[in-house]
Length: 306
Image (cartoon, rainbow, N blue to C red):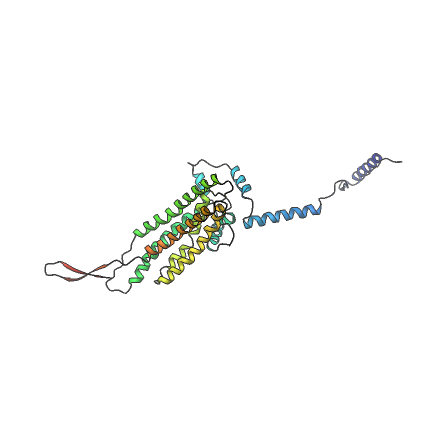
């Protein structure tokens, strides 16, 4: 009776004879079955789930931060170090702008759009565009209000550019700096508080200001009711981005501290919007001096008109 070893030897001998007769023939070993279809389906499902998590921004941030930490960063005094802050493409910038204008309820802006890749390109140019939009629209608004008055002579107010730049850039940098310091301090007190980097906070604040660019252009309309409706709509949209982003970072803290933090964030955001509207568009008209007659001694008598 043939043993198992004899059967294996006979199988090997038959395969050797077959290969000798036909070198192009292939052999299949029954001891090495192909991959289980169930395993293939499981791998396919896992890959699809990872793609969905990446699209929805629900991927594990710890893995992303770990991978980001493995990258060697250039020294801060080199150009390459600052170049990474502007390493974004047009699609990413437009996607983040769209997310700030049309926020998704319940979705975190940092997790959904920034994903541990904050940039300064978008916030810088959004602030610069907003500065000129407010300054130019403020001048045009003043021009249209006094258009048709015979005593009015248009004089552009270039100082509005510097005032708008100081207010907007100070808000876009100092408020995130203060908020970042506060979150770091509370993170040392409460261990499970979500923390954001300074650049992530600057990125959120910068993109949240985009909605005010078309709003500032529409503020040219010389109707106070329309202007205040526009500012309230813009404030609700941009404010909701800030609330949905920073509320998860403070909700595990003391209830009063968490609510006070969110109220402060919203109030400062509203103060910027209402302050720009009140100063650049709803400021009281200055008295205009109109020469009326020349006195006999050569002096000019002027009257004030509103």
